[in-house]
Amino acid sequence: MIHHRRASLYLFSFFSLILLLAASAGLAVQHPTSPQTQPARDPYLALSFTVYSGTSCDCTPIPGVPINASGLDTDHNDSNITDDRGYCTIQVEYSKTYRISIEENHFESVLFDVQIVDNQAFVFHLKQLKGDVSSLPGHWLPTVLAQLLAMLQKTR
Image 1 (cartoon, helix red, strand yellow):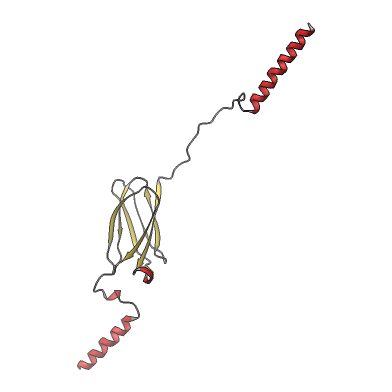
Image 2 (cartoon, helix red, strand yellow; image 1 turned 45 degrees about the vertical axis):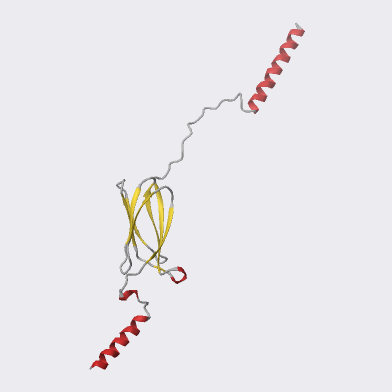
């Protein structure tokens, strides 16, 4: 009987050790699992625009330029106006196609279609319209007006 108790005690100790090892390894303890949920994805992505006048080093940001995005395969549209740095963003839907328009007085318009696959950044150097007096730099205008006034006085 003592051998039987001793064998039972060894057997109990052996199984306890196995359960303890299994529990420490995470095998014997089962916790209820919660369903793995994906974080909610924002359906909108950002398109950023920077708009300049001029080329290369001689460019200046253009504030107040309206930029419009019209959905071609969605009802979603968005628009914004560039800030003092010539910068703005608009929100568009992932995997949709948009017609982007950039129109500013005294500059040629920009119109293009884009399919949205990621956040995207665009930089535009708008071309001034030919023959537009406003395209002359501001410091030239008084000079031109003074020359016109001088010419008019000579013809009298």
